[in-house]
Image 1 (cartoon, rainbow, N blue to C red):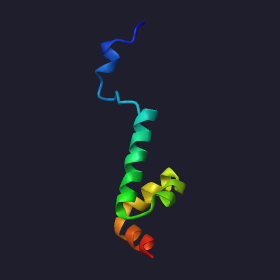
Image 2 (cartoon, rainbow, N blue to C red):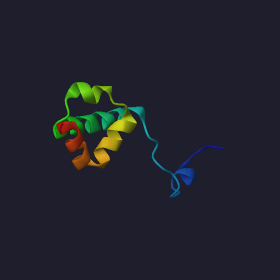
Image 3 (spheres, rainbow, N blue to C red):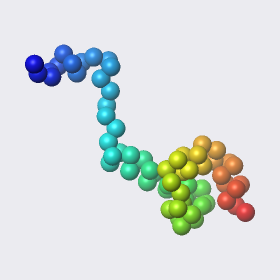
Length: 67
């Protein structure tokens, strides 16, 4: 039995996340933090979860790193 069109045309078929896209998203998010005014050395030390947390509340992030 092959995996042809009948299995791929269903609405449940979702695109698969790739490692390259994840790296690209991480890089874009880190650049956004640097554009906010946080120095690159600090951003480089953050993990992906911390980067997303800081991007969720940009005003609080700017205020926290302005000190």
